[in-house]
Amino acid sequence: MALFKRKAKAEKVKGEKQGQMKVLKDAFALVRKHQPIAFLWMILSFVVVMSIGLILGLNFDHPIYFSIIAFPIAFLAAFFVFTRQANTAAFLSIKDQLGAGASVLMAIRKGFTTTTAVSVARNQDMVHRSVGRAGIVLVGEGSPAVKQLLLDERRKMERFIPGVALTEVIVGEGAGQVPLRKLQKHLKKLPKKLNKVQLRELRSRIKAVGGLNIPIPKGPMPINRNAKIPKR
Image (cartoon, rainbow, N blue to C red; front, side, top):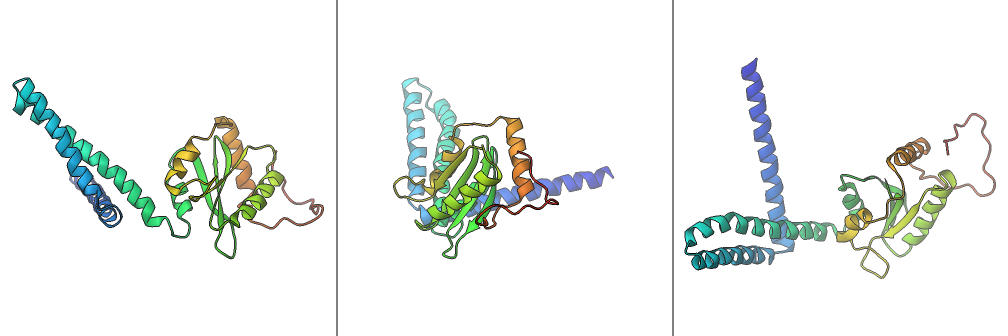
């Protein structure tokens, strides 16, 4: 039994290493395609750090010792440049694709829970909803007409879940818009207006009313005595 456990553990470690290598390989491919100059910056950063270590070593009469210390630092500097460029290349690869903003929002691991495409227009404009300590954040992407989708979605939120802080964000490069590469950072910098208890309650209320991607009927809301009304 112990032998099988060790074998399973070894296979798991091997699988994780293969997964990491695949991610690294894909990142290299992205950088080579979208940011080819990044490799020159990597080499330059490595050479600069090694040169500084060698100069310090010559000044202190220990060139080999300082070179040995400088090597891993130079490697880390080059790898840091690579990760930054890979991040930029990843954004460039999805910049003009449908639902690029949704991909970025879903990549936020902590702080926000995102429901993608809560509202979609025929011209493929769409609105995503992220919920976090900042309240409800509605993120629109597409043509300038997405502003109307955002307004409609805001009205839905205010009608079903009143009193909650609402923030609207439009992804783009124009005035008043947030570039795709800065979208995550923008959301994380939003002021926190809810505590953890309030956030759990908000998520429960949103879950109770579903995706909310439904038309708002004109006039007074019809009364259904059997309908469950979400707590406010």
